[in-house]
Image (cartoon, rainbow, N blue to C red; front, side):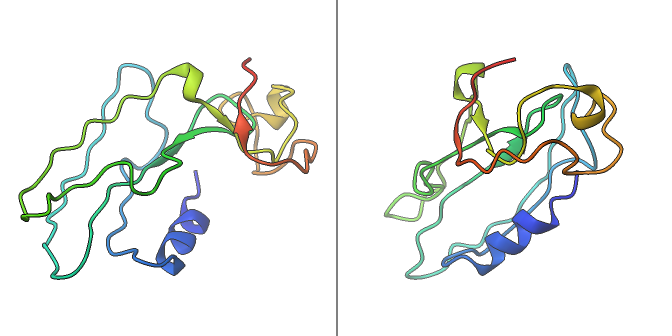
Length: 131
């Protein structure tokens, strides 16, 4: 998918320091993707890990951490704190951008040929109702 809009939003946010994209396309069941980061401990800066990923196939389902301070990556004394993120289906969010019709021509990974082809939902982000 196109992560340029969310990367630009991240860059504009206060405190954004590093940004990265893991993988170069969909990560299918059973596949793994990773990207190594070298993170410099900056003085007088608090470092946190945030993530977002679209769920496929879906119109606009995704997972992310809603609390930007949920995952500190350095302790107060500067020691690295490993981060382990586990997302389960009950944590899936609905972006509110398209109706959840799962019609193949409107749904990523089912047959959608261009983004944003589903019916506009004009909604807010909320827990996803399921498929």
